[in-house]
Every structure is written in C-alpha cells, then in structure tokens.
Length: 276
Picture 1: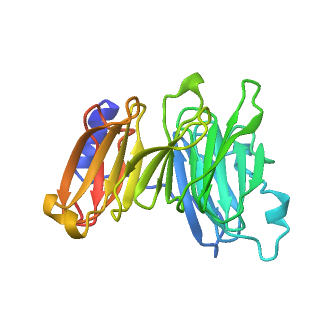
Picture 2 (picture 1 turned 90 degrees about the vertical axis):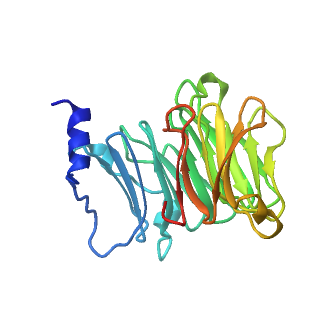
C-alpha cells in the first residue's frame, strides 16, 4: 500500500498516530511551529526547544538564547517561534529576536532587539530570510552567499502590523513581505524606498493573510454600509500587477485563516468563525 493510499484509509477510518513531545514539566507552551521533520516550541520560561523527529539524538536540539534575555529576572517568555528547513527563530516579550541553524543549534546566528514586543515573526519558506514586526516597525534580514546574516531594510507603517508573511519562490530576487496593518495590506521589497499599498478599504480590517509565489490572499471584515454586498470576503491580488484577480466568500462570519501557499492552482483553503 502506497503512502497516499494509507493516508486516505486512515482519514476514512478516523485513524491516526500521535507522538508526544515534552520538554519541561510545569512550563506553559506559548507557540509552536513545524517544517518537514522539525518541530520548534517556545515556553513561558523563555526556553526554546527544537526537535528533529527523524534524528532524536540531534545536538541541534540545544538552542542557547541571547545573553540579554537569559540574564533578565524573570526571563521574558517566548511570544513567537518559526522554523523552516535550515533555520529556527524566536521572538521574546522583551523585544529580542534570535535565529539559529537547525543543523548546528547552539549560539544564535543572528540576534537583535526591537523597540516593542514583536507582533509577528516570519521565515522565508524556501530561502534564508527573516521578517519581524513590532508595533508599526518592520525589519527584514537575510543571509548572503557565505551564510552571513545582515539587515536588508527597516520600514514604518501608519498602523500597528498585525500579520506578516514572506512570499515563497523568490530565489535570487531577495525577500518580499506582505503585511497587514488595520484595514490595509502592504508589500515590502528591500529594493524599493517605501512599502507599497496593495489593498485598503477604510473601516474594514484585515482578518487573515497568506501568499503564494504569484498572489496574495486576504480576509476582509465587512461591516455597516458594506454588508449589502454579501458579507465578509477573501480578496486575491496578483503580485506581478498589484491588481485584484478574484473575490470569494460572501460569509456572515469572519475569515480567520487562509492557506494559499500550499493550495493547488486556482484553489485556496480558508477557515471561518461560522466553523466552516
């Protein structure tokens, strides 16, 4: 039986397997992220733990946090974690951000401190790039050909950034970030002087955001005078032209999540407060 057939049979019979990953008793899990065989978790104790489910004895599971956060009393808890196939990142309540190699672990490859508590943290799905947002402030970092990390740009938006995603498939073009702040969505390209506005409708906040290599999808909460057009919607924009390509939804509930990046062409998966 092939893997696809086995997965289909398990789904039909509601059968699956669960592996428990436990780090430290009495510590509360703050955030978790996974990619391939890696699982990254952050705790209220300020600890960050990386598991490689294919190599349980990997020395990379030891991640040493920066000295500023480590020496604080009490230690700041972890607010966000992200992992991809090559690096793992964590943001802390004190504004610090650390980034490690998933291969070697140990000391951070990159460390910096934001002026405020980070609201969003993102890694490039297929490239060595990191984006973080604290209040209205956004920062993009990337590794060069020799593996050295450096800051590419900083920007400030008119409102607090609520979500941040890095566009996949950028290759040698460098990172491109999509950000939502209030009722607007922006594109941040380090090669351009200012963030570029992609979408803005006054009084209708963005509820979720995702990006593929060619499009950005965003959920919009419709209230007041706009309810006559069918309720809450998901808008899809072209990254190449910056123009809308489709609008779907017409739901009374808010859209809470979107997966455009992993969806087949011309399809997307979303979740809604109406539990559909």
